[in-house]
Length: 305
Image 1 (cartoon, rainbow, N blue to C red):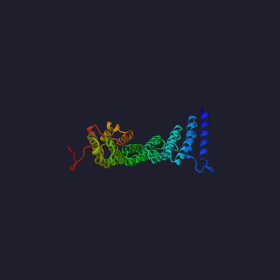
Image 2 (cartoon, helix red, strand yellow):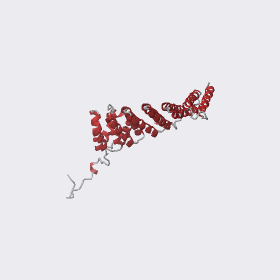
Image 3 (cartoon, rainbow, N blue to C red):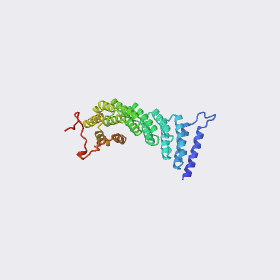
Image 4 (cartoon, helix red, strand yellow):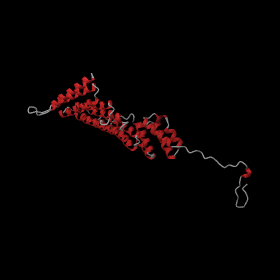
């Protein structure tokens, strides 16, 4: 069965090559028919478990659909090639494939499909190539933002911020969270912005800047946070100002902080671990025998009473 399907795939490739040939009577290649044959070949190779050949045919089908002007089909073939890459456990070129497919989807007018694809590939790459994953999420957010899908743009922006925190790129994460506030002002949902304010607050503490944290509380916390959260953040700023390690650790280990997104909960835990309580000074060299205690001398040469 597998060998039969592989052979069938090769026959489809031969047909595709014929459609691309020109002659005195055929001046223009038949890109559409060639693309269809390459697509059929890809299916045959996949059934025959010849995944590498299947992927190559999908790329060729995409190229020919593009030449024919069938942008949506060109994007779909790239999308399928990405799925095959995941099945083969070879993600070396999925970033480039995703960017091309996203571009084709946008040109076709399917911006939603473009951003969803970029997010899907970002999930694939976040462990092996987090930098590329962040680029894809930012692009997905930009696409959604320009298409008035502000809620979706906010979601992608927040995913990028969480990944940046995981990489300890706090300033870049801060930039993404600030962008999320900007999107909320444009008309996005504000239901979770209190949590985002707390996250931005923690990023300032990660940079050892409690003054900036206080500004976050003033600029965003008062608007989006519940009163209990405002009180906690205000107390935390005071504890940082007073360098009260016990109070800082207590609040950073509170249930509210621990139930945040895992990256920010870990960030808070790491911040708390930096604050080590100073041990009480022990009195040493105390002589219990009163006779051995040396009494201080007065100006008059005698001991004090």
